[in-house]
Structures are given as C-alpha cells and as structure tokens.
Length: 255
Image (cartoon, rainbow, N blue to C red):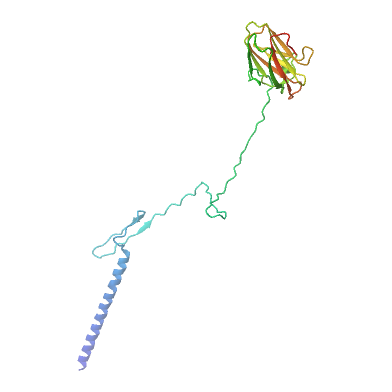
C-alpha cells in the first residue's frame, strides 16, 4: 500500500514537470517571432533614394532574421544669400505694403571753367555772319550788339587794348569783286569801345578812337575777298558796351 502511494506521487510529479516545460516552450516561441518581425521592414516599404542599405548575411537553416541598417546622408546647409532683402511693413492701412527706401547719395563734381586767354578767329561768331559782295545793299549794313569780355587783347601788341570775348562778335564773308573800300566802324551808346579785326590773311588790326570820337573805324582799301572777323572791346574786363556795328563802301559814312 505504501509502495503504490509513492509510485502514484512520483508519476504526478513527473507529469507536473513535463507540463511546466511544455508551457514554458509554448510561451517563449511567440516572443521570438515578434522580436524578429520588428527587425524586418514590411515588403511594401520603399527606402528613399537618399538612404543606403547594408544587409547582413542570412542563414536559412537557423532562420536568423535579416537585419537592415539604414543611414541617411546629412543635407547640405544652404549658404546665406548676399542679396539684401526688404521686409514689407504695414503702416496701419490694410492691403498696402510699404517698403523701406534706401537713400541715394549723388556726388556732383564741378570743375571750374577756364576763360579763354586769346581771341579765337575760328570760333562761331556771337552775332552770326554777314555775307556781302561789292556793291552790297543796304549800305551801310548794320548789326546791333552788346559786347565786351575777359580776353585782354593787348597781347596782340601795338595799339591793341581793351577786353573782348574769345569768339568774334561778327564774321564778314566778303566777296570782293572790284570794291575799292570796305569800312568797318562801331558806334557805341555807352563807354569807350575799341575794335580788333582779323583779315583774310590772318593779320590783326586794332583801333580805338576815330573821326574825333571815341568810336573806332578801320578801312580796307581794295579789300581782298574772304572772311573778316570783328571784335568790339570794352576798356575794363567783363564790362559790356552796347551799340551798332556798320559796314560800308561809301567813304562818307563814319562815326
């Protein structure tokens, strides 16, 4: 009786141990499968082009899980833009943007102009040109003008004196044609005028007073055809004299 009791107890203990072992095995197997499933990405998952894949070797017999090592290339940091940008601001009025305006600095450099120091017979005449031929009409031919300037004509030497403009006051284009006299004279309304004439040969002639007056006169006997440039000078620099310049072939016409 005692021996049967021990045999039954031993049998029950053996069955309990076997059941415990089976339960332990059944509980540990799903955990392993779950862990392996978490390491393998789903079949429909695509790896971005910027990612790289580094698979390890797989043992089919032992069913070792396929491990995917994913590394992502770092993105480049954009360089700061050198172009300044303006930030729009509102000025209390909806719908209107106000942009800050940068001040513009304008540098203007003015160089002092140098006044001419000599007469320039090639320059354009202040009062234009008179195109005349022998026997011209009306006689005398007259041009009103206001003259005087900053060029000291005394550099020409001789009896030349006074101050005139660098450009001629009048250019006379004379056709000649057998004329015996070409008289040029000036009658001023103020001051004491002087006169300078450059003939077609490039010679300069100067005169101050004539015919008992303060007005100048220059005669060209048997005048050559060509251009005669005339300047009327004032006695002081940068002062002006108003009057009339006359051209005549008649010796009876004078100041």
